[in-house]
Amino acid sequence: MTIQPADARAMRRALVLAREAGADGDVPVGAVVTDADGAIIGEGRNLRELTSDPTAHAEVVAMRAAAASVGSWHLAGCTLIVTLEPCAMCAGAVLQARLPRLVFGAWDDKAGAVGSVYDIVRDRRLPHRVEVLAGVEAEASAALLRDFFGSRR
Image (tube, rainbow, N blue to C red; front, side, top):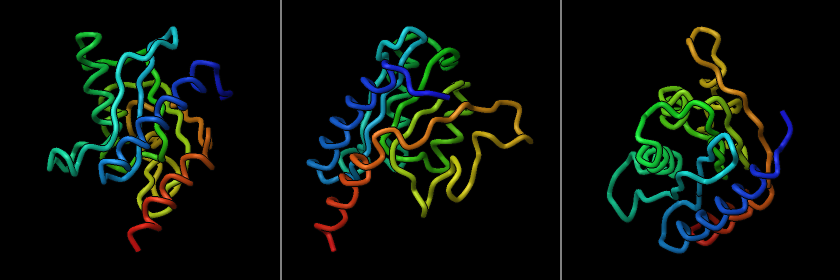
């Protein structure tokens, strides 16, 4: 899968959202959902610290916004763009939303569920699989995380 111009624009927006999350004391992860035409229909950033909600990962927040925007949980034809490889919870949510495409930036070697630790979205035992493009703006995404965690150690 190759990066589309809409994916690059969406990743730039996700990076802005990630910076906002970091500024608010949350892990700097941002996500957007685009429709089939590449228009952003949902966006989110980590909000766990602000909301005391363990499920308020950027991906889930963005998918909830997209579902509200289209009036359906079924996000067929859409793409999730996120700055960090999704965890198991978020990868499961991608499958539940029936998202056909996932684009992400940095790999997560500790909790990634799209190829690092697990590969939930492409598991042949499941009825839905996702096309994945990894490493888009990986260095910019990883730098946000390094800076965030470096300042806390």
